[in-house]
Length: 442
Image (cartoon, rainbow, N blue to C red; front, side, top):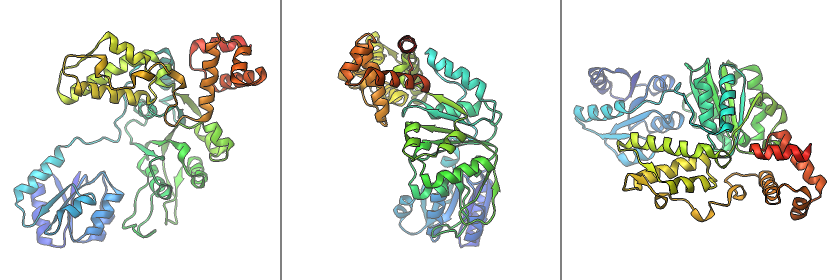
């Protein structure tokens, strides 16, 4: 690892390099911005010290490599550079000790390891046990995995678990959330670009696929990928090589792909927003993660797990859950799934004064805790709402198809077809539901 230095003053570059060496680090100094842009790499340079006369380099480096901590030196307006991404601004003339203190803070920060993974999963529900059993069989292989589930169910956690237990666990795990990136930037984020490929391309940039070489790439929320890029992604998956924007040559890459979505991907294929051939390429090992309300046995173990995490992080004693709190947590519908549970427990740990977390310490909508499956979760599709309404109605009439069809305003044949469709797609999560479904559709 090295600390990059860019300054027009060669003597100052030498001084800064000496300070870096005295701290036991490796300096990589230059006065040439083109050389700086050619060699800068977050895997090699976690920190860069750049003079404020190179504003375009500072801004471009932070855009391309947001993980690099940038210390700016100069005699101008420090706030301006903080606003464009600098971590610190040292105003000239500054004391050597000030630089040492700044670098000491940055060097002491925990480094996020690319090959770090989710070594274990917290679960108690039989549904999750079956999924974990499958993961343990799938992880050592090279097969693509397609994970479906509502937002917050832990799809990325499962992806990291697969990587951690794979033969690629020494390689990088690179994730990209396709729902969080503007459509115009998706191609450059995935495949990278060459210097000068377009306005603002100050230096060549390695895309996510190249970063994942030798490891695993997670295409999070693949259902949000623009249709215009799906054909290019399909070719990359088939040929195992990428074309950077502006490049005339292809670069071979070695990766395993895991994709996730919270969409009804079948509906997306039907309406033409997602390519069926791309789905077949990704859906070699399908995994459907049930929502938290469908695996209630996981709720308390997960809540206690999150309590332990917060306690360790904050250096405070663990708190216990009262009986009333456990009952409340089990009855709540959890529209935000595991992510919402984690947030609720963190708030409770921080705001609770005593050693026990009571019902009053749980910040959720207690009035709607019994609404269960009919409560529309964020990102829920119309077809999923329809499925839940049908199942709920059947439950309310003890699975009498005639009564359920009357209440729903549909024919018995339509109801039977819907239930067969859910059965074929594996969209009946509960064992009791499966038994009833087999009985009425057999």
